[in-house]
Image (cartoon, rainbow, N blue to C red):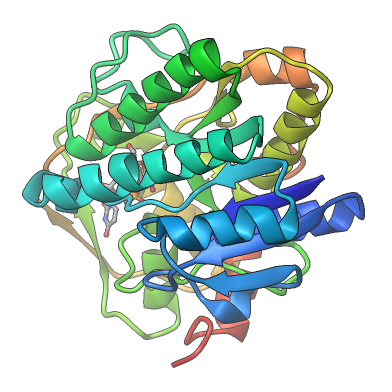
Length: 329
Ligand code: UFG
């Protein structure tokens, strides 16, 4: 298929592009405004620098490349920022996303795989979280993603747009190929921050909250390898092309690790002590987020290959120690 990948130069996006290219079956066109993505993270395909706000550009791309399907990952994705600047989140994640859906309708592109998030659930009332868990987001980021899921459902009924939403838990690690990895600026994610301490780029990691109702008092998260996330996108596209109905799937490993356990794992993998200190809770952090991913395993045959935390951290470490400055200046 001819596939448009929005946000394809981002962390998850570049890994999805790598997996799509590996199939040898798809022509990949990446649209990214490079506000957060890196041109250097793209291992192939056509690259277009641009924004979803530009509807003329979207029309040009759909026409020129005969786009049949979309993987939509372009978005803002920081919970804290979304609380302070909801306008940015609703504009980019909803309004600009609508431009994309409308272009799909105009150009008769019928399939979309959407990067959604565990943040659509809000504070969990039961764990592990299944897709049917109530969706009560506690921040504009999660809300913007949930709105978009609902919009796609309406577009399916009205225009036959088939969609699969993938609700990511905590994406982590780097491609086992060694070619690409995680490079956020500024970095806010736990594993790269701990690795920056190991590399001497930071003094210490601050543990955000030690008084949660969890076994060691720190937050528990479900870390999923970014390549396992990426392969799920390929399966979802194949399913849609084979006539699957619209659906939503969680993507996690079903096992939670506390912040302290993750720091200890990085210590083990890098073989040196990590300086840490205990800080206040970060606003908006639920205590525990662990996924049930049985639905995608059963329905799409998804099987994570890099599910243990040690492997996830090892691939992240391999990338960061060879690329301490990420993709460079
Ligand atoms: N943490 C620390 N210290 C740090 C950084 C993080 O203690 O310096 C803690 C956080 O409080 C959290 C855990 O480590 O408990 C993981 O934090 P991340 O920032 O790595 O990941 P989040 O769970 O906050 O975020 C993930 C995705 C987001 C998404 C969110 C939805 O990375 O994009 O889940 O809940 F919005």
